Amino acid sequence: MQDITLILLAAGSSSRFGLPVKKQWLYQDNKPLWLAVADNFQNSFNFKKIIVVGSPDEIAYMKQFSNYLCVTGGNNRSASLRNALAQVKTPFVLVNDIARCCIDTEMVERVISKKEEGACIVPVLKAVDTLYLGQEPIDREKVHIIQTPQLSHTDVLREALNNTVGFTDESSAIRALGETVLFVEGSIKAHKLTTQSDLEKLPCLLPPASDTFVGFGIDIHPFQEGKEMKLCGITIDSPFGFRAHSDGDVAIHALIDALMGASGMGDIGELFPDTDAVYAGADSSVLLREVVKRIRAFGFEISNVDLTILAQTPKLLPYKQVMREHISTLLGIAPIRTNIKATTAEKMGFVGREEGVTVQAVASLKYFNWKEVP
Ligand code: MG
Image 1 (cartoon, rainbow, N blue to C red):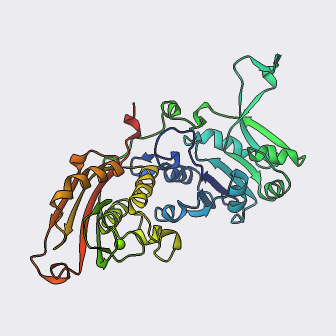
Image 2 (image 1 turned 90 degrees about the vertical axis):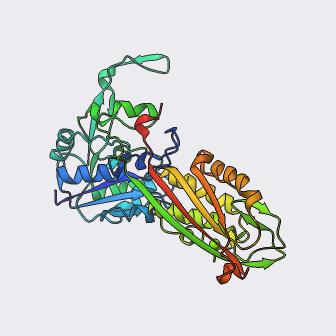
């Protein structure tokens, strides 16, 4: 397979999927789906190179998982494919949508074996139902249901992408150029994962591993007179708030770092740089909500969190319960899994001298068990 590059398209938004997790991040044992599919292809076919296309806000995270070349996707399928093709040096390219996650190796072999016989080799299924076009029945023997992966001559596909618009697969773009498209027998195993109900039609999918992931976060902010004090998203009655680029909610910042730590996503500064004017005075509850959305989209669920606020002043006892309820709402987990503790520093150090507050947080995550969704 030294003359073939595999492109895996995994930049979709999963808008029709119906679960908080994106399709490409459904965990298969301990691998996200896109990586499991890439590894399955590589183990069966030993391609010259595998290129995975991810959406712009996922690509840095994807790169932490493997040595596959991860390329940033565009606004649509053809833009994503063009970005990937720029990295292809082989004469042939096989393109597979991540939604075709169950690989029928015999079908892929059928596609590859015909590579010299057309500009694009396409697996197809025959229609089994009676078909109408508008009000008129049509001859179903003439109907072909197109699947992926499709194998293309790299140069022809590049030209097709530069000269055609609005196609939904490689074969239709190449056909529009007047080049030969060759059909080979497809496979019902290559069913496409589009909605949640497709999951049960894909017996190759594995349940997620039961690993637990723990993350730790710490943040420190000095007091600033005359600013509103926010802790755990709650306004605290105090003559000073926290000096910071954002609203200075030191507790939520520590919690965000704990969540990002557990999921391997780096730290809060990478996601919300304090050099970015967008986050000037930002409401940290909004930032936490964004992090929680990402954690869910990337295949995790939150098991529990535990925060310790070190503050000599103000007294936090009256606020602990309302903090707990607010954080549990933002995380989408029960209050019993959202513990908030407060302690003084016994008048020692910068906290004891009442110069600022520090918060430590831990969070534990597990993979979202998509197999057990009702
Ligand atoms: Mg901070």
